[in-house]
Length: 378
Picture 1 (tube, rainbow, N blue to C red):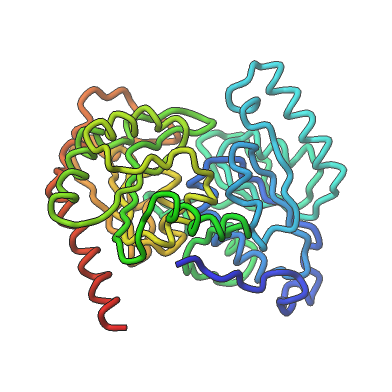
Picture 2 (cartoon, rainbow, N blue to C red):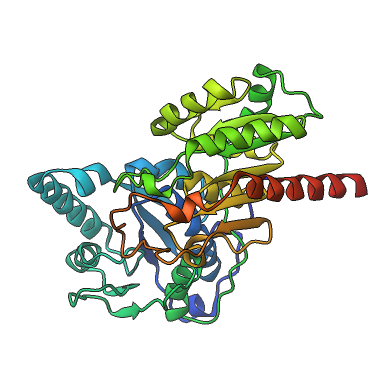
């Protein structure tokens, strides 16, 4: 299911009309975090490269998300920020990293920057770096140092919001799909994983991500479907569908996965995998089930059919529009409640607990039946 690398280097793509008439020679992108956001932004990276194939494109990204972009052929160079210091450090630590970044970006002498954050400090960073053309997103504050501003419409999908930045500076751009690019090592990882866990060629493999909601900026457990329901779902799957279950996530999901494996010991704990290794095994899976999180967006980018469980976040804004993605969302009175990077206090999580195990299982069966039908037709 992994997409082949498309020719996106400067020598492989014809110059656009903008470049023929003197487009930017050196472009900076600012997008530090988080994992899911950077996968969502991948279409923007690809389209930008196609528009400016001769430009030098650099991305300023947080250390925590370097894995997501380091193999992307649309990016010529990755500049790494200490996002832990920026988001969670002391005030002096934040200032030191900010000053370091200003000096770093000034030395590069960029012609244009696309700021893919709404927060004003990133706009100030671009201004102090002496970048003449500054394109970015509006926020709630009056502070604005942009030369061109995009004001996202309510509920607009974030993929389209990022592409709006490119539309602001040129002609129309169409969303096609997200991308995740594997390293050669990641490409080979899946075969070894299948061998180590004795997964036969004809066995059905289902990926389930019961965690998520943790990133360098914040921890958001209110985005997670209850873990006992994930355990019930796995038990129901194994009663009705011969398959192997692989539980994916990050280090912070290990406690949740361990609790689930106490009830479902045959499940495989894959929380130790890198994002690239995770993406590699997604090519072998038949379906993915998980919360609104980074692994969900990686699975979708790999072309894996997904069942996305949404509660406090708005699926209109964050869910993949791809036909292979099914969203399970209950529009209870208080949902979606996620606004401007914050969740209100919530003790009931009725938006997620309203999603029943049987409903998720029913949708999963449909995906597996569709996959089986497609295989029979070949």
